Length: 300
Image (cartoon, rainbow, N blue to C red; front, side, top):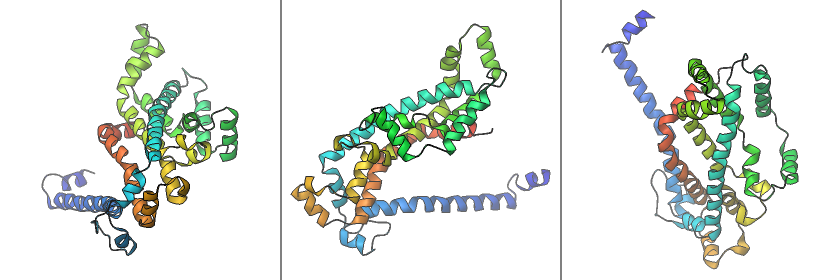
């Protein structure tokens, strides 16, 4: 161990070679990650003939906004966009509140919560096995949630993966902090709200990002639980116009656009439109992301 540390210390040739190889590998990994995104953006901004003939590479060919006009020139797009925004604004806080209230007691040791492991395994079991699509649909229908925004939020209000991250983050906090607060007469609600949550900002920011991405990208539940077109979320709407366009509700201009657009270009435009909100949110949470994920990693 000491020999390896000596070899990689200072400005030795081995250390320089190690750094160079790392930079090369990281650069290659970055290119592999970015180039497909650039290609998708170029496809969405290229003309139909260029896309269908495979001429588009990393730069648009015969610049065209046809795909974006088809997606954006429809009042249903803005209605679906607002539904997705509403889903995120309601889903993220509800998910966080449920997870916080469950993770705090489950983070205690067996002396303070004797049946802790039973409850933990209960939640883990639901992560590995669920009731299935049809029973879940029947429950949503019987509870009166069908065709409402709550059908998209409440069935996934407790994400077990996020729960395990926050639970283990709480377990990493020093026990002396809680013991001192209890001696001073603080209740568990006070400890949770004024001590644990401020210290858990990295983990909470990570969970906000995870939950935001989930609610924003999810389209399948909207297809199952939502019947009214005015209540369909954005991803479900985009999926529907690309698979089965609602021709009866399209204008003459939109019909002309359909005849002159490329399937690949429109799919690429869909990806770009769906990704923009996530790209806007991520920079604000990025500084907490790695720390929260590492400190809250599952260890038991």
